[in-house]
Amino acid sequence: MKSTFAALAFAVFFSSCVHEIPFSIDGVDTTAVVVEGTITNEFINHPVYISRLSGYSDTIRVPLKNAKLVAVTSSDNGATYYYQETSDGLYTSVEKFVGVTGNTYYLHIELDSMVISAKTTMLPVTPPEKIKYSRKDNGYYSIDYVADSYVKENPAKYVLNLSWEPKNTATLYYYSLTTTDIAQLFAPKMQVTYFPEGAQIIERKYSIDKDYEIYLRSLLAETVWTGGYFDEAHGNLHTNITSDNPRVKTAGYFSANTVYIDTIWVK
Image (cartoon, rainbow, N blue to C red):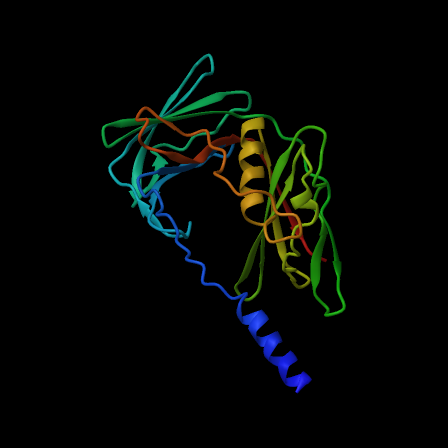
């Protein structure tokens, strides 16, 4: 009798703790304009991608067409570079040119009767440290060290493009920042990329100015640093994209980066 009463009391207690909580999600501002562009010291047609969000996934974009773009440098012999639309939402400079370290670049976009602009400065970059990799128990190699995650000065972004036969490729990103965050120190483990002997590694080290570092930090806090033991409060990413229409939000980043390129063969 006592055991039956206890069981009933236990069931009533726990059933009384179950409540339906209504959950709703506010709509995404699909009018926000996202601009992503770079200028480097490589002799290329430099790209700018313009889009709008169409939902909660950042991978779903609506490319924006028929924009007019121009980039102007502040150097003594200041040059103007015009852009053309090469595919939906993707604009590239009409002519190839080399960005110059020390120059400030201004991006001017005319879109739907509004003007969108950005400003960025190209800083110098130092040669990267030697990449360290080693053979693991499975017979393949993996990266052990690229650069310190914390530096007192000269922050940088590293992009490693790996390739090996027959047609395998991988892209790895590393960052050296002048700040250290709890979310960074206790970030979730990343999947290890394994590659065989003979693989090619093309390393690109990019210079970062202070504003671009703030953008990257906010991006990392919302992506690879999230899901750990000490997540930070989520928020909008830092941006240097502005609009003359106060009703239109902007996002993304336009950066100028000096890049140092090195090629390594795994052996």
